[in-house]
Image (cartoon, rainbow, N blue to C red; front, side):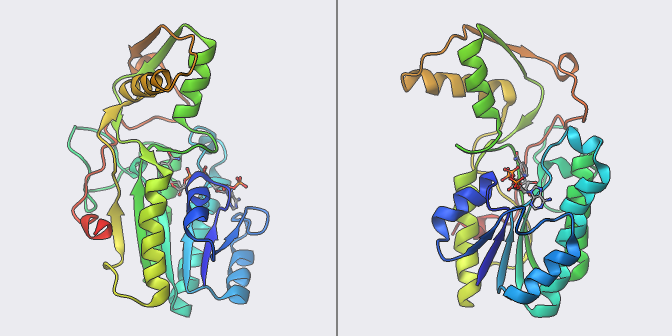
Length: 270
Ligand SMILES: NC(=O)c1ccc[n+]([C@@H]2O[C@H](COP(=O)([O-])OP(=O)(O)OC[C@H]3O[C@@H](n4cnc5c(N)ncnc54)[C@H](OP(=O)(O)O)[C@@H]3O)[C@@H](O)[C@H]2O)c1
């Protein structure tokens, strides 16, 4: 059986279309604030493959909610990984570009040194470490700038603002690659089905997934607005002004270079 945590998140919602026979649990059925309850739940369900799409993803709020975000992003994933090790199950888990310090302009590779610049990144890194320390069979997919038709994400915010305002200001000094949740779901579901059937799979480990071109948030916003106009949407916006991160202060610092490159992910796409 394939069990997916985080039923209503962006990635898990995309996974639901591709894994109709998997068991999807939401945050009420499986609350990551209580790792021992999650372990008891795994004891009762005994899944062969676990996909962890649950996470504390509110980057700025995490600076204030340190304990809760650490439990959800690190302690509970670590407990799940230990359960996998003891029960011969495999874990697929998602991590983030925010584990890197974000300087330079070279894409970060899987083996590069990690050094998060904010608490959310720190909790996700601690999650990776706890999973690796368990020595279970685990695939950790680092992804960046996730968007989908559901939940909270950048394209939805830009389109809402573009309908309300004539001028938008968007940062133009942070680089990364947007990631459609459907692309993540395609790669994940293919792997999960193979693992469940006991078929040959790429080796467990950390993989960087990138599907789209590197760009800044400003470039991404511009293309979102262009595509919406081409699709016939009525938008009020006349100008999208490029601004620096310094002009747009946020509670949690963001890495300037969030480009993910990969040495290994090719095998996952074959
Ligand atoms: N979004 C991004 O830009 C981005 C970038 C890089 C990496 N990632 C990683 O990719 C993965 C999937 O991200 P996403 O964008 O799909 O996330 P998302 O849409 O924010 O969904 C997160 C899910 O986690 C669940 N969750 C929150 N608190 C929980 C708790 N206490 N117990 C159990 N579940 C809880 C939420 O449930 P409720 O809906 O019930 O609250 C929600 O279903 C995460 O590991 C994230 O760190 C995301």
